Image (cartoon, rainbow, N blue to C red; front, side, top):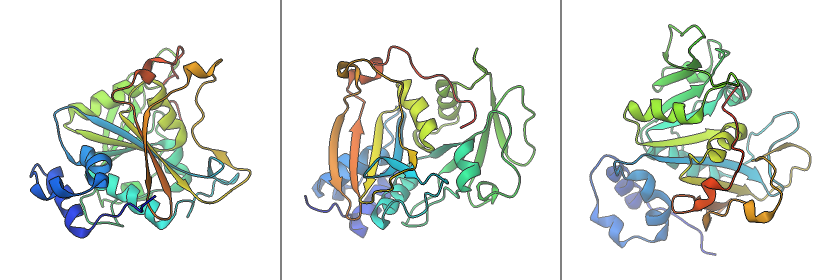
Length: 269
């Protein structure tokens, strides 16, 4: 399998595409630009929702103590930063924010920072975290019965019958603000909620060639009785170099409806 590489010229053309300036250069490039990144760069009038999860060969996203640093290889990190640069907003759950204190900015490649969105139903995110460092715009999504913050823009949404926030309501609030392409970056529980409710167009599973053993699992969906109920997206595989990427496309697939009991809303990952 050939390694998928992007030259500076192709990446520059993708960034121009993101800004609404179609480039003829992309018409002569290979499959990586067209199938992997071009759908994220283009603004078609229909929102594109993508999730990314990086995990080990044995399906772990962190050690038992929660250490996920350097789990992905350099090429895997570069790929994640390319996605950030091409989307309008990157979404994470409060558990990811409290555990990892992420910046969610674009640093490994050229490109603009996305708007950073943290799902924090109960207002648990404290002052002083990198998410609030002013390097990029930040929005906190909270339940409407939680006092809004005065240090950052806040979206308040109603709780469902279980006292949680609905992923569909979160996406509706973000698209109403003009965000066309949205990355659901983590953690795994947040991605699971969006996936089980049929809200993802694509899912990138980036596999790093390491074996963690005991550790925190990646995606863990509700149980099924027979394999005919399994999600079966169209999958394209890319060799990024240090990592192998499985690009799962749900857009033209009936897999969204295969779960008879969709996951509940987002509480406090």
